[in-house]
Image (cartoon, rainbow, N blue to C red; front, side, top):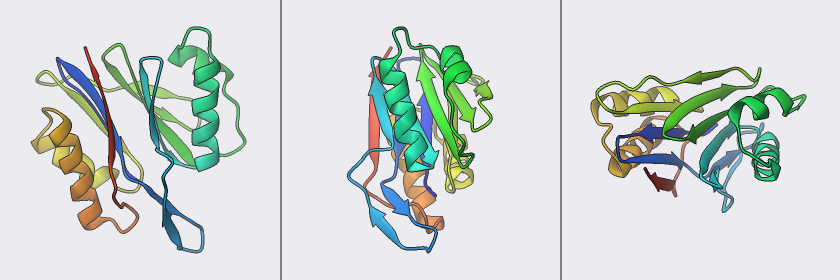
Length: 161
């Protein structure tokens, strides 16, 4: 219950997320713990289980050489309500709970993707505008405007190419 947005342009990569944490009972809090992180040059963001997201961050941080293929082959969890966005070397991937990963195609000099409950609205916004950090913020704002489980503050991390 969130929105995580990834965007790769010719000059930079961006990963942004909201800050809401929603319980099964519908109660929510605004978290100070970010859903996106730069781990030694790899941008990673999670949607779904906070436990799995934090485990993924720790696992990636411990890797000698960070590789999506190695992560997908070694990361283990019994939970299936989660997904990741992974940006490495100017390439954007969506990682599913079944450990499948899909590289997003570059179209007209950018690639973008979104996960979480706000993904469809954010993708619509990114289809119209996908040029930089402001595009990521606009996608998150659009999701917040239409999806009850997406809330500020937004956190956006950036990496120049």
